[in-house]
Image (cartoon, rainbow, N blue to C red; front, side, top):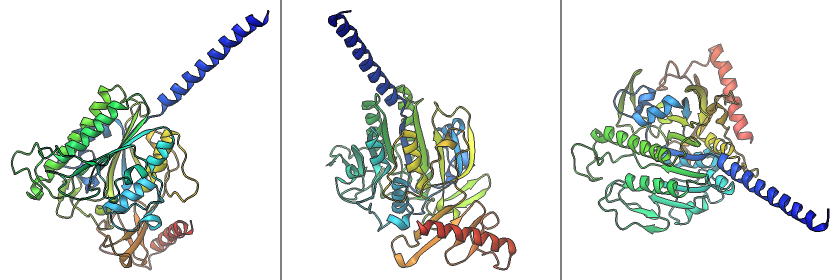
Length: 425
C-alpha cells in the first residue's frame, strides 16, 4: 500500500468518524426532551376535575392527568412572587425572597441552567419580577412576551404586554392570555427541531374575575369584576393548555415533550368550590392547606407508559432539579439548592421522595416582622411558634394539638429536625 492509498483510506476513515460524531451529537440533541412548564395564577388543587372538582370543566388538564402522573401533594408558597422565585431558583424563600415583585439579580433560574445546556428558552404570560426590560434575559430567557413588566395596565382586556423589549401596539381588541398563548405556539413552531423550554406563567385565573372571549354574557373589560366569571376563566385556562398540547401534536414533538402543570398558590378567598370531599374555600395568602396545596400534573408520552397517581410530597423548590435532570443539565454548585428531583417518579420509579416540606412566609406578603415558618408532612404541621396541627383532622388549623400527647411530642421532635436541617445549610 503506497502513501496515496493510505491517505485515501485515512481520509475516508476520518470522514466516517466525523459523520459518526455529527450523528451522535444529533441523537444527543434529539434525546433531550422539550419542556413546557405551565403555571396558573391563584388557583388551588380543588379547582380541577382530576382532583375531584364538581364546579368547573377542565377536560384538557384532566386528560393530561389521565395519561400522565398526577401528584396529590404539591405545595407552594401562598403568594405570587415568593412562589415564583422559589420555583425558578429551587431555593426556599428565606434564602432569596427580598420583596414583593423582585427577583434578586444574583439568582440562577431553571432557564439559565437549560440555556447553558443548549436549550432555546422563552417565557410568556405574567412576569411580576421587576421593571427591567432585560430582566427576563438575565434570568435565561431568549425571548419573552409578558404582562406586568416595566409598567402595569390591565391584564386581560386592553392589556399592556411587552414583547422582547417593545410594547405591543396592535392588541387593543385581543384577550391578553390569547396573545401570550399565541407567542408560545409560535416559539414552539420556530424551535421544533431543537430542544426548547417554554415557561408559561399564565395570567389566568387571578382577579379581576371578568368575562373571557367565550363567556355568554358581560362586558369584555377588566372593570367588569365578579366571581361569577371565575368558572369561565378556569375553562378558558384549560382551553389554552389544550391548545399548547394540540400544537405539540401538530408539530410531531409531543412524544418527547415533558409538560408540567401547576398553580402558583391557593385560590382567592372569595371563591368557594364544591368537590367530591366537600366545599373548599380559597386560601390564598394563608399558610393553611387551601393556601399552599396546588395541582401538579406531569405528561411525557415517551417516558410515561402507565398513568399514575403519586402520593409523594413535592414542593416548588423541586422543579429546578427536576428540569435539570430531564435536560441533562448541571445544577449550580456555588449555592444551596433545596429541591429534590421528582423525575424518577414521573418515569414510574421510586426515586428519593422528600418526607416533608418547609415554608418561610412573610405572612402579610410584604412585612418581614410578620414572618412565619412551618414544616409538615402529609399529616402533621409544626409552626415556628410551637403550634402543632393534625392536618387530617383539622385541615383549617383551628385547634392546635395538646402538648402533652406522646404522639404529638414525638412528631414535634421529628419536625423540629426539619427546621434545624433547613437552617443549618
